[in-house]
Image 1 (tube, helix red, strand yellow):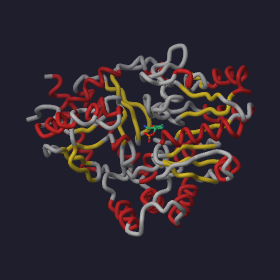
Image 2 (image 1 turned 60 degrees about the horizontal axis):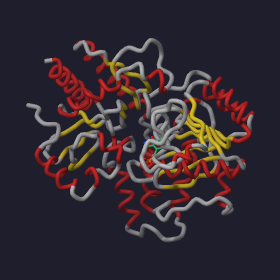
Image 3 (image 1 turned 30 degrees about the vertical axis):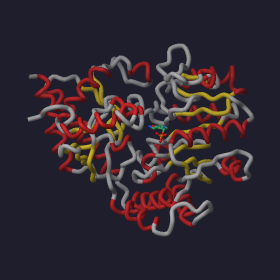
Length: 425
Ligand code: PMP
C-alpha cells in the first residue's frame, strides 16, 4: 500500500542532510520537491533509497532528454577523461563539439561552451550591451533566465521586483518586463525606449510558466521589431534546445535570433551549456574585447558529452517518438482525470507540457491568463502522484524523454489512475 511521501531511509538522510546542507538541497528549486533521496536512475525510471521506483517526468529539470545514465554518452565521457580533463589550454574535442552543435542548430556561426544556462544568459546580455552600446533589455513575465540579480524576478505587478532577499533591486532597473505574446505592447515600448535597449530575451516557448506556445506570427513580429530598432534578439533555448527539434525552437518556428543560449539537453545530463550566435557578435569574445571566462568551460567531460549527445540526436532522431509519447500521455492523463471528475487542464507541446486544474475562458497566452487556472490545486495533487510512483514537479511541467516507451506509458497511466482513485476516496 502507498504510505508516506518519503520512506524511512530518505527521511533519515534528510535529517542528516539538514545538519550540513541548508535545506538539505543544493539548489533552492529543489526546496519544493518532495523530501525523497534517490539511489539511482536508468532510462526513464528513478529508484529512491527506500527501493521505490518512479516514472520520471522531471528528468533532472530537463537535461535527461536521452534518458538517465545514457550509456553511449557516459562511455564517451569516461573514455575521454582517461586522457585528462582540463588542460588550461585547448583540446580537439572542443572544436568537434562546437561544429556539431552549430550543425544541429543550423543558424548560428560561433559557439562558446559554459557550465550553466544562468551564466550563458549573462554572457549573452553582456555581449548585447557591448555590441550595441546600450544598457537595458526587455524580458517577459513568467520567463526564467537564471538566478542572478539582474534576471531573477518575483511575480510582476507594476514592474520587476526581486525574488530573493539580498538581491540588488537596482540591477532589475536595467530591464523592462512585458507580458509575453503581445507584439503591440513590445512595439509601443520600443517606440519609446528602443534606443536605450540592447536586447529582447525570451524563452521562445514559455515552458517555465504554463508551457505556453508563441501565438502564430508573434516570434516573427518580435524579430521585425528588433530589426527596426537595432536591438538584438536572444532566444533562451535552455529548455527548448535539442528538445522541440534538433534545431530547437528556431527550427520549429522558423524565426532566427541573433544569439541563443542552450543548456540542459545539449549534453545528455552532463553539466554543460552554450551560447551560440552570429559571428560578428560572438567574435567580440574572440578578440578579447568582451570577457567570457570559466575554469571549467569546454572541459573534456563537457565536450565529450556534447559530441556523443549530438551524434545520437543526429543518427537516431527521437523527436517523432517523443512527440508520439507525449501526445499519448496527455490524452491518457486527460481521459483518466475526466473519469474521476478531476478538471485536469493540459497545455503545451508534448515534449514539455504543463498541467493545472480548471478550464480557461480562452487559450492561455501569457503568465497573467495562466492565473485563471488552479495552479495550487494541481500542485497539491502532486504529492499523491509522487506517492504512487510518478516523479513530477509541483509547478506542473512534465518533461518527456527519448527513453519513455510503451512500458512507461502503461505504468504511468495505471499509477495516475490509482492516485486519483485514492484522492477521491
Ligand atoms: N533559462 C531557462 C529557460 C531555464 O529553464 C533555466 C533553468 N531552468 C535557465 C535559463 C538557467 O539554467 P541553469 O539552471 O543551468 O543555470
